[in-house]
Image 1: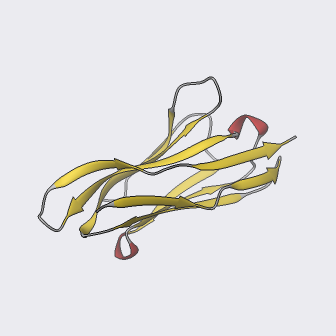
Image 2: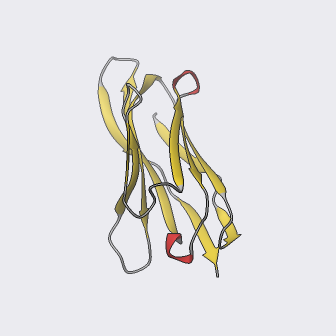
Length: 120
């Protein structure tokens, strides 16, 4: 069974940093395009950052220059380094990605989410 498991969330003061990790596990061959999304209370889930299988990246305007997405394909892991955090970054952060399973078929998966809270 394939799983995406996020970690690294927590409570931090404004201006601080956090690093989120998302590990793909199970009977998999590797990870394809991956992304981080977030959902604040009462708001829709929104894209934060994406990384393609060949290493290209894309960011929401609200996080450009503060957040960095990266990946370690050997570890089937994607990271989100978040610097200069603001209270408006408070949300549940979800990992999403296209996972290639050992039967050579790919599917999209979501993680369970990790809470990030930024205090002012």
